Length: 312
Image (cartoon, rainbow, N blue to C red; front, top):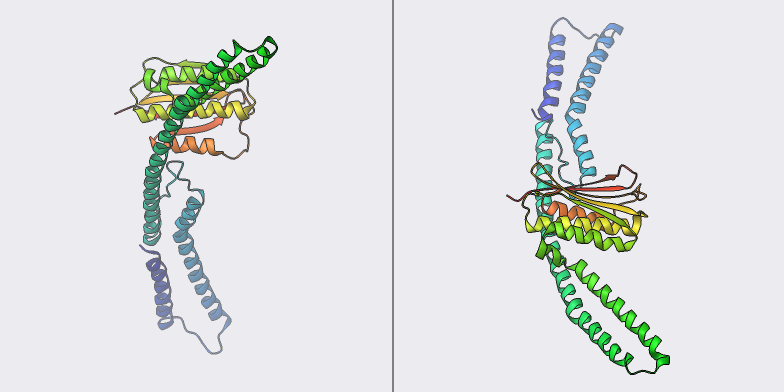
């Protein structure tokens, strides 16, 4: 029953009952006696109490809807309001849930396009770094080697320093290109890519252990890329912000898919707001329908978990 008809029915019953009593045994004199005034006040109080009860019950779903609107976050799946209450409130809640579903679908489609464009741009930049900048630095390094064979001995040390600086720059360019475009992921698969990622971060003052279980279920290319990027972002956050000296990557099969865990022994996230890195991880997880959780590790650090379903 709609809220309108609930309130109307209650008032109609009260008014009909009052009219029946007035036309029957109850009379109102002039001036009104104390007993008659007491009866009228009691009836009015009952009618008001009934209206208040109906309104409280009828408007309660709208209050729940308001709380759901305040806490809604399209980056986190679920969070739909329960359809309940009078017809108007139930219809409004259904419309709100439909709107959220449509927005979530549009956001997922937009995110997919944005992330796809981002990956293409990463690949383009990686190719240019490797093919253009890398080759230029290689040529400079070869030229410096020829110069080093001809310069006087007193300039040999300076030329050697220039060679070392150029070689370090070339190594850094190659490292950046590998991070932008994980060729090992395309060539050798997810397990090898995660092992290589752990080895790479060992040079950042971290001791990164990895446990990649065997017998992993088949995954789509998109799922493998998301798993790799989440592990990469998790280790990057650890190296930059956590103040940790140990980290761990675990990839294990679970019922219906795989679970990735990136854990460190740092200071944890505390009350710090989520940065662009965490938002990016959530966007990627939503893209493939995965579940991402962020919490405290057993030893007080940060624990990032990504649950991904297998390929169908």
